[in-house]
Image 1 (cartoon, rainbow over the protein chains, first blue to last red):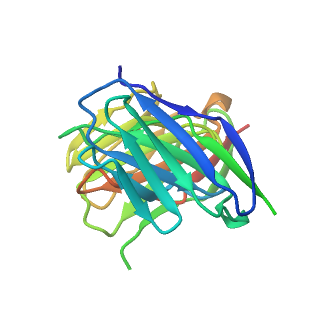
Image 2 (image 1 turned 90 degrees about the horizontal axis):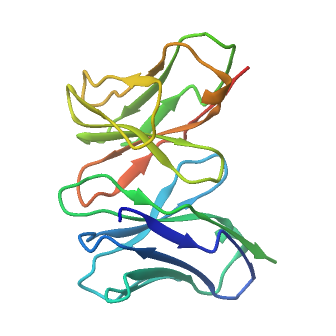
Length: 112
Length: 111
């Protein structure tokens, strides 16, 4: 029940296209859903995060869509650029538990 | 500048050696974490601390130990390194809203 399932494992998108990565969770107590971006040789960095009181959050080309009833959330990257090529991780946490439950990661490649 | 630092960045060491991976943060965060990650793969929590003199083991069984004597410092020690310990070790810290800030990682190779 603590798992966060992320798909796809890898994704290739043409430059200018839309990249979509999905995550699903079981624990209804989760109330914080971040996405992290990791480049090779670096630690992950927070990209965007959402709480379940909203269904969508947008920051520049990055959008989180959140479906509470389906217990799913997704990351959309609009106008994908080669510089977006990285590994993306979704995660979730609940209340006073400061641990993040991580998805397995998606390796995104944007082809020029 | 507020940041989180890890040293060394790369370490190649022989089996049986004792090693300490350093992690320091200048952000004043009370919560700190150690993760183990094979390159590009999922993150596994091995240790965490919610404050000075507080340490807990994470989900992934690890032969390492940690200490938290000062807020800013959270070193990880392997008493006897083995080839199975070869991996990347990431340190992170957080304070509010569960946002974790990561260091650049230490890439450990045990021969």
